[in-house]
Image (cartoon, rainbow, N blue to C red; front, side, top):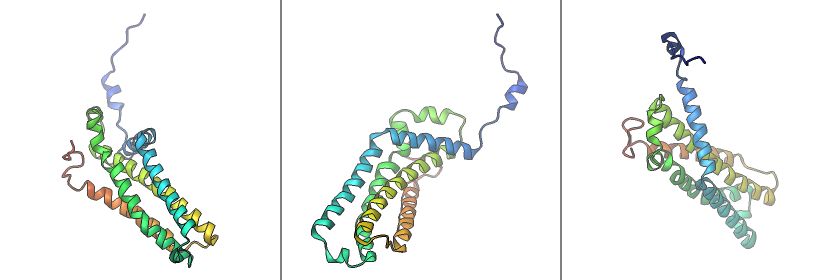
Length: 191
């Protein structure tokens, strides 16, 4: 029986850490998997669907003239009245837990001890929260467009798509400003 040999010096020199982009991609992937496994993602998704269903029921029952006068009025009233609420909820649900949850669950100590750049960990978690929030925004947009198609057909004003991009930008800014108190990426007051 052969004894296992220890790695030689040339073997150790050949081992190279993955690039920062690869590290960010891996952290983002696992962060998204954690969101999809958690109740938090589905609770927020259900809240967004409930908001859309309530708006659908209210507009269908009362048929307000301000909503149904033109497609632009419909989308501006529907979208402007509720998307801010959806952005705030997604920022609270995803952004607040991205970093602090690691040390609440005592998993951050294992993550930081790995040969990963701390900035890669931070950016990967931030991107995971941003992607989960964008998924929520897209579900709400699908509900909005579905209602608009029901009332007005395929007459969708371009302003809706501009507003969607602006909403994603606001979510991006909200997540950036919530981490602005950090002088170094992973040395926040949460840790």
